[in-house]
Image (cartoon, rainbow, N blue to C red; front, side):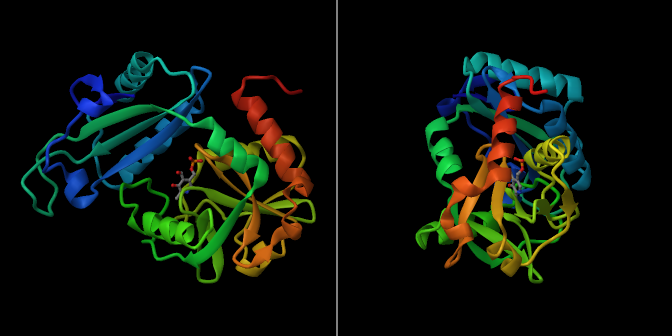
Length: 284
Ligand code: PLP
């Protein structure tokens, strides 16, 4: 893997950042994860727009103009020499003596590029996952892609320890999203997913899936659903940049459609068209 430490490109295992960077001490920063398929960035512009929105939402001034950031991103990818990869980019409020008020420091932009293990994610996409619902204990600005992922990390680990693949957050009785994905159900041929408000991250994959659904004439309703509605759905799936579209075969102790994800016709159709899109195959 390759890294950018805010000043220069170097090998990932050689990269270092200062101990008093506010990302370490306060989680004071934002990030993006962008997928590279067959040597090309997928939805780079959408990710960069969200990156700008996240920065603005926490009153963080990016250290460079967007064209310069895109140049750095492309350079990092080029130096990595990787064709199936993920680029992680973060901006912190810089390094300064530990104190809560914003420092005078210049924001620090760092990046890593690593290969993506396609085998493990593709197995889950075929077989589906088991998820556990859990109280959404996060703050109420979940639309910001901030570095503060402790609730996500804790709930993911708890779910894994209990033999599930992931945890699904529930706020006020309504399903919001996964620990690192958005979630949708299909009922009576209609796709339901939580509206893109402050309670969820506005996933790029979610956006792509909704566009695909509309093209395929699948009715879409951006409306939150309950845990019971999730359990009783005809189909359910999560969506994210790294895992892509993953069917949900089990919620807590309940199987969706007897756990038979191959009967998830809408999910399978969306998976097929999503893959066609990132593989650059024209579907008309
Ligand atoms: N929701 C959360 C909490 C996430 O962390 C992520 C991504 O990791 C997503 C949703 C999916 O977003 P995207 O499709 O842009 O990767």
